[in-house]
Image: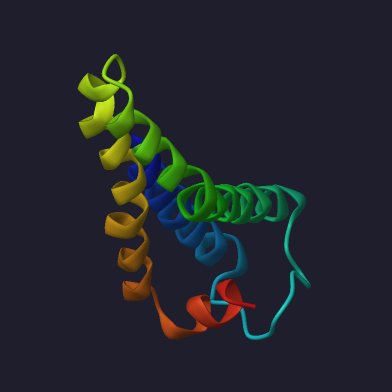
Length: 107
């Protein structure tokens, strides 16, 4: 479940970084007025989310089937299942963020 937890920590740290840097939540879509460090932090969080989402949708099901079908890989099935499920367990927690931050995030 580490990747999902890392994503959530990245998102929460971005929220704290954003509010402490701007003194408020973003009022518009985009990165106008963001510092370089905040832009990088946002890019890392977005990148992590996007790659993790794509992995969970396209790669993870193949890994689950492969580990279920091959006897030598079967002992690692719980870890593979936990890896993909961690995305679906931790990502909904971002919905607890303030509305303005979520509006900016889903831009």
